[in-house]
Length: 276
Image (cartoon, rainbow, N blue to C red):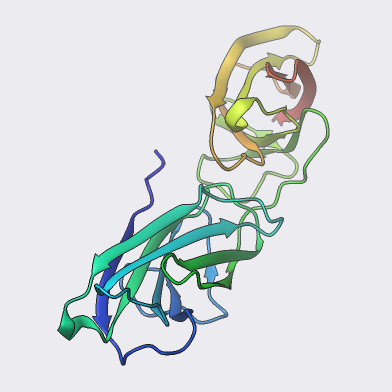
């Protein structure tokens, strides 16, 4: 479940500001209130990123009131927004002893779980609503994700057989013994989006004997019906099959049927494996 971003501000001590409005001491961390990560640090999809920055150069009104608006955006390597714009409004009145204070803004950002690799960017826009002063700052960071080639039409890519659910290495060639469990994973791309980046995709599977006879069929093995602010680049699919101990050796096939209900597309494929 997607976790909501948290936006806070506090005040900390600094020498009285006379320079133009500025964003200073901006840092990115991988833990809350943790040390800044080095420029070589790589985030991974699904990870939280913690942004902190200070504000100087704001102007207080005659009654010591300050009013500052900070807007924070995050973009992937293709400049697609990761989230809705986060807004912090700093609206307070300073006491006489607070004239040398500065605001601190903290923002928590959740990276999409299927984010791809590349150079990402945080964009900060700051406005002093009383003086009209404005400034902005961009902060790059790196994400290492899993790459799946896109497609203009519905297709299942990277179909591979595995010995177990946790295996990272695919079976080449895919071969099983009677009584074993077959595992397979693949990626669905090329589906169309509805309103709010909605997707409506499902897939069915069948097992086909060497003779061409269909031994087993599941019309809807799984489905992905969801919407998200950040568009999902692909839908991961998986299946497992318990192979009967009495099955005859030979070359069998998995029939895969993928349906995109928003784009009114269907894709079918056969992937072969051997029973020894």
